[in-house]
Length: 154
Image (cartoon, rainbow, N blue to C red; front, top):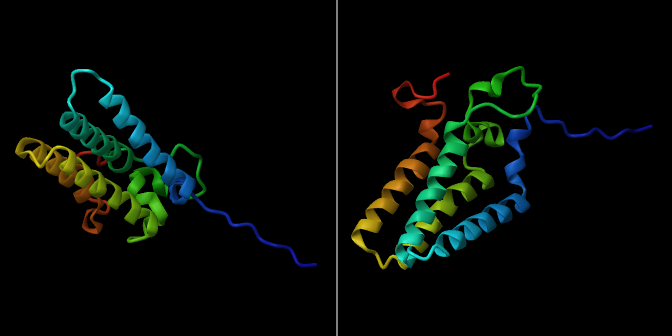
């Protein structure tokens, strides 16, 4: 009698962001967040877009590149304990679909933000610094397991 084997992964943090439903929910949350910021009466459209971009990049930096460990009891015997969520994603494999998606969304958001701010200099500086420092540089393969200035080392 032939039995089928189930697929088992050591760390659920490695795979849950691969789901297309997660991607859709992520984009939906960005849209809802922008609409909430836009509904504040004293924010004009360029300011609302800049705040959306900055809050998005800051929250994703904290979630993907600052917080370490896993909320699950994993079978990897603590290997993921000192890794950020980005480093755990796809078991550390670079240039996967999921990593490309989470790299392209902030770039697309930056382009949309630049358009709606009419390429104003001050908004452009805030948005580009937010994109580069909080979203793109931490995702570089060269930054894998790198802790700048000893921050978040343990």
